[in-house]
Length: 74
Image (cartoon, rainbow, N blue to C red; front, top):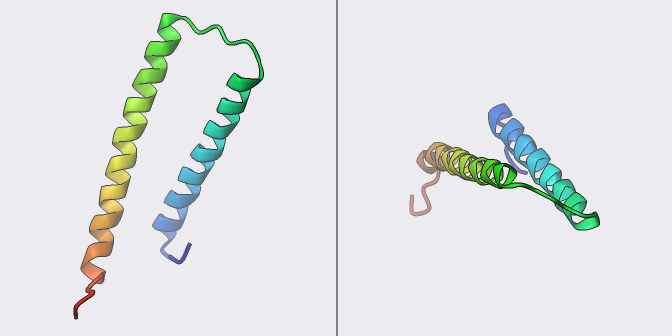
């Protein structure tokens, strides 16, 4: 990571923690028998949709903050 901006650093740290937590969840699901019911699947779908929307917003805000500083043809 090249940024020294505290908000960017913290954002990337949180995203990395989420990535590691999801890897742990994948390992748990692979390791043993799994018996989700329909409510679990619906909750998982809702979480995935919410995370996707929030991640897209974070990415757009970071791009929006970076673009004014990026001038490749100046």
